[in-house]
Image (cartoon, rainbow, N blue to C red; front, side, top):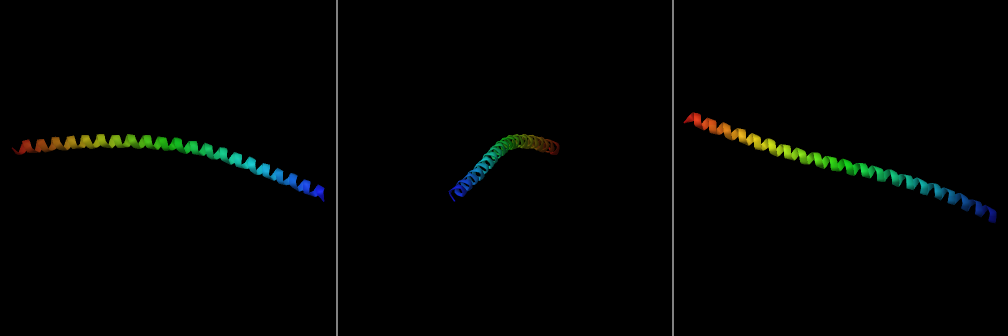
Length: 78
């Protein structure tokens, strides 16, 4: 009876060891995925900032064109 308890304990330790190895692998995979997601987030934020700057520049140019058109229209009406 004592021998069966020892064998069961060894099996439990083997199972536990396998589960720990699986958790270590999962943790490493999640860490790698997290790093990739953080890099993607950084890229998206950088791209967003560039788009906002381009939008601001386009708005400024459009306002300039509209102001020139208004002044041209006013000068033609005078």
